[in-house]
Length: 304
Image (tube, rainbow, N blue to C red; front, side, top):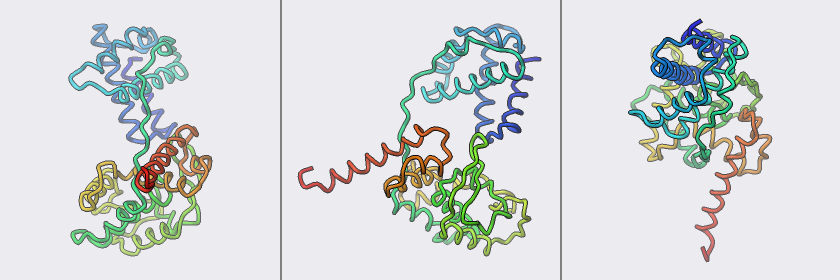
């Protein structure tokens, strides 16, 4: 088996068994393809599965150095993500194809300081949800659809991919939704009346007959709504509202968690609602809440 065939086998495993998102498949496939290409150039020969099991720690470090110093040098965070992809690739080669490579465990990636989430304020979130309906250039059903999607992200803390995975049979929304998130991890999220009403309003305006097993959210020509459309819509309304570039669709998910924490919700509950595998991931929101408290203190205290 060649290295390229092993790569195709791995990506098929990620797509159908691990049910990884299209973005993850693209990122992992790109990183592994560059890795194999570097090894082919470095060794001056086609790379087989057996050769992948013989790659040295020095060669892996040379690949990272190549990424750091190339025409488009990668940041420490991107380098860490690339190395993580290759670790996962080699783990698959070991478990499924019998080609272990202990050298990968000897390579350390660059230290990356995790950045704090960048949520929007409550007022900004309300503005983002209301703005689609105020755009005179949009058809009423498109505005209702965009409002429904953004309300799902903020009201339920969903990722874009999770919101767009809903089927027509899921509506009218029940009191709680069973969401299949990253790593095929299932979680239950409560549905607020405002979220249910936004979905109902969209369906009342939608010009398409949507079959029960088809995606709930539709594009202008009737096909499934894409994540790129949601991102472009938010970019457009961000300009009209004068919001910073950090006000993305995913920022609404950050806001969901941060505003719950500020209202007294405990970290374990927020972890379950977001579907985080590790509590340490959820703990990043405490940094945001502490920063908000210090900001309010410095503005309000007479001696600040």
